[in-house]
Length: 453
Image (cartoon, rainbow, N blue to C red):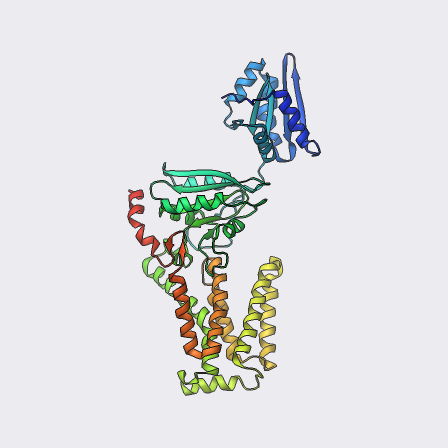
């Protein structure tokens, strides 16, 4: 369909050129052959030169008349509708080409995409199941999702975020099973976002969170297409930002963060065993430091006499209370974990392993920490890594210090009181109106079966 602007096409070309004139990569190319004339205006650093040559320039010289060229260009699937000259200017910055032919303006999407490479999963690896993750190109990601979710009810709406960079955001949901209230809340929060520049889904997740100081995550981020498909089938909403490597899923409840995609592919008893280990690791990660402080400083009678004496003997020579010892070793572990994230991959393993061994050995020999404390810190670190989703893992690391403070103040009674307080906090939390402890997958099984049949 032919697209026109309300102003004179020649004036529009001049206005676009003036707006982009300081840029070195602006190209204003006239095409002439016999009685045929056309003008191209584009930014060469964001336009695919090969496609431009094959789709526009070469046919211009091969076709007989202007009418044939215009009819051919109108038939291309990557032609865009023109609504205003401001819209044309924005699309040019994204990789579109403005074509002036026979006093008509055409806008063609011929963007160069360097971020469409599909990598293997690195943040959420699994033994079984798909191994490819999302890319940083929104069109590629939508293609990956559609290839795995063949439902005509799948809806993909787009909008732009960022007052300056105008980043494209896709809102993806299954119209038949989506939670309508959640969808309305998501759209309302997105429309309320007023920010000059937005670059990543992590930033978007923070901006959408009404309770900025919430202890637990209420939205899930994932790089796995299979996790996205499962959540779409259960009625959730997926948010996909152009330039982002991950998808935001809403709502997200506590049990979602403790679910690995291997649970979908393993046998029944293997899956149940892995879940038991996962929740056991979560409990150990939260309580081990507090139990150590409580048992050594307040309630040694909870252990057998031999174990209590062994713990007391290992602390001979340690010059400060047990909660200072635990806090010191936990902070060292946090520093090693942070260093493993920030260091180059070539030296991460060596630096953190050697650093951990040297610090642990030196701390025990210098009587700065007991041998049992080293074992507890190692167990806590391993337990933390069992949690499948990073957002929950980071939150649990913070909760661990809260429970340590309660145990330092009140012993085992304080630790139990802290655990009850955390549970009460979680039970009153909501994610887009859904209770945080709701068994989400179970309540949506009927709808999921309906889709499958």
